[in-house]
Image (tube, rainbow, N blue to C red):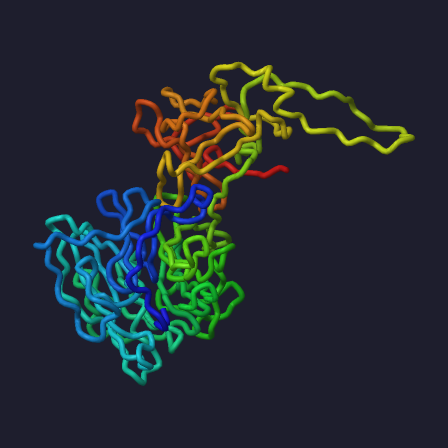
Length: 505
């Protein structure tokens, strides 16, 4: 974060319209430089520049964290110029925090100054502990701040933009720095949050900021934010990455450039009507389901404000890539198992015409028309209809319109619940009490008619009902056989559990 302007006193807006619900968090998701999302007792929390932060009970609707109870005191800010008035919600005001859970405690790293404020580069990175992130809990109390890094006015580094990683060997790493100099790394003691005695900072990257490390499959990844910051709709922020087998680098990109030489492979950049992707955080829900958090410097559909964003993480050839926000539309729902498509279990209605192979025509050929819903719907049962998979023939009983309905179903981390109906009808896909599938005659908004859609780390999708009637089981849509879909436990290692959405028009 190059602090050229600070977002202060953001006021809440009304929830975005349903037509935008597939693209942005709802509520009041206004934040800059969000920390890695943390979960505490079923709620999600993230902290940003200027004190305070956001929380969500479902991962989709975000609002400001409420102030703590008056008897839950927080320590005074740890010196230096404050970015805004201190907040009891998150220590020290300051800038660009990060968070990590270690054991049964949460460690926050934040900067009290830095980022070129007033033309100087002097800054401090501090750490604090808390047993809980819930300010209403009697256990909510921040520990005293501990300085773990600093920079001087004339130093080729800014002690700001902290990022935390606990490696698989139990070592705790902190990276920090901005475009004004190098990205630096120090090692912290995971028991105390202090800097390891005698540890010297090393330079690991240049030409980026808002750095953080993550670990996967034997690789340490260093992610940084490249481009221009804090210029609203003109911000060119984007997130880049390099990797190394050694936690201290060198971090090398996909074409062999080191990040200390300015290298970095693109992870995510601007999207349509959203600019300035910055401040990466990784949240692992379970095997195969990972999300990245970051901010848009300007969300054109949210008044141009800086907003929290959550996208799937796709891993391709060992590199993280920003996944897609699922968009409303009409699709063929295709099983990865065989490539067959989800369809109503109805009689196949033949179209007129026969095989035409030989012979010239005296007149230009007349194109065949698609089979229409009106031509076949009269042959369908009026009640519930079973579901199967079969060869896709772009027929009406295979075309599903998928629409976000957050006003009915709410959401989950990074997404809204959807209704899935046959195109041109209100006939809806639903889960049954015996964990099977049916298409009910009318969509009512019942929990068994609401569907969660997660893009997986390999780019395919998981489809899950919000609830199976009379059950707490978290089942997903699964191909039990080539033509037999059902609901069962999700298995990331099986193509039976994976689906694709194809716009076949």
